[in-house]
Length: 223
Image 1 (tube, rainbow, N blue to C red):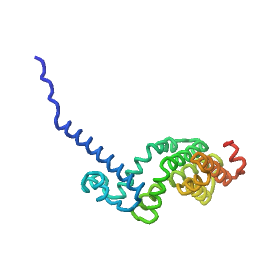
Image 2 (cartoon, rainbow, N blue to C red):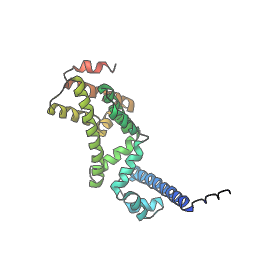
Image 3 (cartoon, one colour):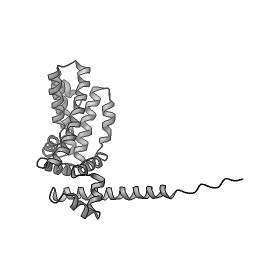
């Protein structure tokens, strides 16, 4: 006797449909938040105003993101993919110090240059708004930790440094790959590509010089 066909599961379909609607709302809210930051900055940037402009309730925004800081974190995550930040996974697995350093600088210069005006607006708001400031600071600390690991690879390759020297070099790499530094160079160079190339040269000149090589030797590989 043929077995009866299993009935389709309306509950599974319902859950899938619900998730699809949730994803659409999430994307709409993030697009609204981005547009709000680009046009008006912090003015009226609240869960209420974002909800109203997105055509959803404040409770929906709260359920999806929690707070303004949560919304900003989600916006950062959304910017990260087209900005090339997924490459950091391979950078952190790199065992060749020079390759890791070059890739590390490339990743952040590419990210800063991708949405430069929006990131500038967010960092400006972070200077005066504690909630935004905490979100930006958390991202900066992650970059600081990654910079320390890159410098650790350099130490292992070019000779062990003292704890103080390691800390100074890690701080130097962190500072030279900051958005503020890149943004200022991009203005001065007149192009994103020019700023990225200059950051590479400055980073290698500073770090290799600090490890005992001359700046000319350090920069030789970039020519």
